[in-house]
Image 1: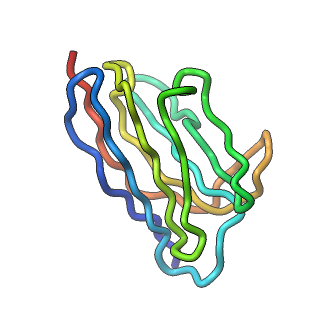
Image 2: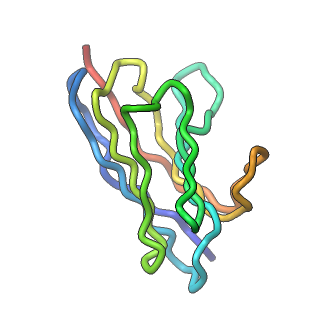
Image 3: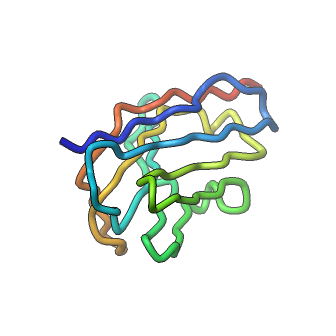
Length: 120
């Protein structure tokens, strides 16, 4: 059973930075796509950033220029560096793995989520 496990969430002031990590444990294969989603209270889950095995990347418009996604294929690990954080970035951030890198991306596996809170 593959289980993405997130770490690195927490409380930060506006303008600060956090780095999220996610290790997709239980698989001996490298995933084509790894991604980060987030869900704020009362809102739908949204795709924040995704990265393919060839390191093509996608970013939601709301985070472009502030967030950077990267991965270590050998470790099935994906990172999300979040800079210039804003209160509206407050959400539960979920790691996702598997699935084809496409405009209709659908993950195969989900993490449990990690809380990110940005205070004003």
